[in-house]
Length: 232
Image (cartoon, rainbow, N blue to C red; front, top):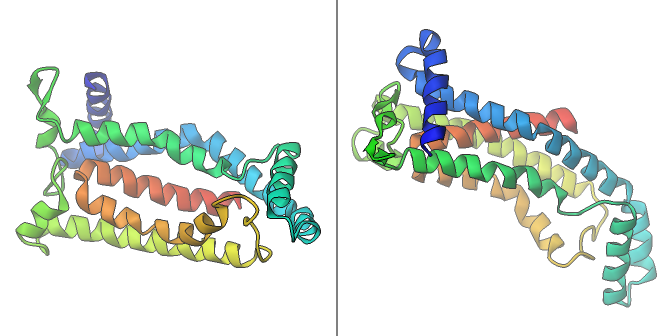
């Protein structure tokens, strides 16, 4: 983690002439953008997979018609079709999973009082007046509409807007799919119904993690929304 801390400090030093006291916060945003840029090829592959799955819908509809009375045979036929087309119904999950290590690194970095036996100097950095190692409950316990509280309110507003757009796009995509799409894959239908609303869980994450990790989440979530719009 000390290596990661030095990376954040070096990025902050690079950005200090432009962002001054908020340079470390800007470094976290830049770090997030670099992580997402590195994962972009996987996102493009996931988008291609999504288009390939959409192209399979007529054949899936035929399989559902042919095996309507034999659910087990239908499941096997759908899985065989996905294998033949080299399409995974869960391929879109991989880009998100690969971001978890970076998120947890930031979470632990700004939750630890020491790094390598030395005091964690990063905890003394702020975004405006809100400490990067602080939580929304800290601001709410003081003055919710003060400078620190307003930082979180802005983050909540950004997340709510992005989550709403993501939810609407996901529900439109689901509505445009043929009836019963995904039912042949165990559990996929239920996931499809719940998935559009999962983006709002980001609000809970921003509220409970250190501000530095919240910045990562907000930046990554916004990047995802823009990326999906560009790749669709």
